[in-house]
Length: 153
Image (tube, rainbow, N blue to C red; front, top):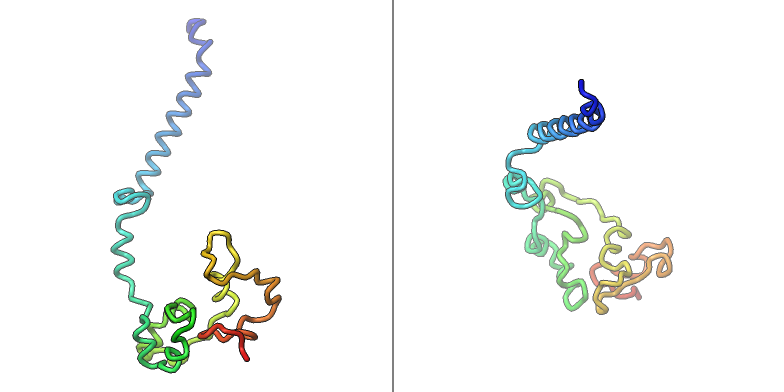
């Protein structure tokens, strides 16, 4: 071998390692990534069909209001009047259809906190509190009625 080739032999080996690594990466990516990935952006287009095929889990406000008229009346004129029932109680299609007679009660700290935790970007008209300073370890319903969030008398 000529002396000049020996001077660049290590560089050619590194180029070979990088080219081999790139080829392995492209082959693995071709095998693992679905063909419809990236059609509508950075996700798989078939996801839309998969999600549409899932059964509906939410019953909707009208299904709740049909049986729970006393709660709907209690909420009229309050700040929670336009909050859907399933926003706090979770998906209740099985309850509305009669498959599950008594759904579980929501965890009050995790239900109230997403909407009322103090955050800079929230509108000023939405009540916001620092939960540790506001109530400590007490539950929200110790002082507030959940459907009409005024202070209990």
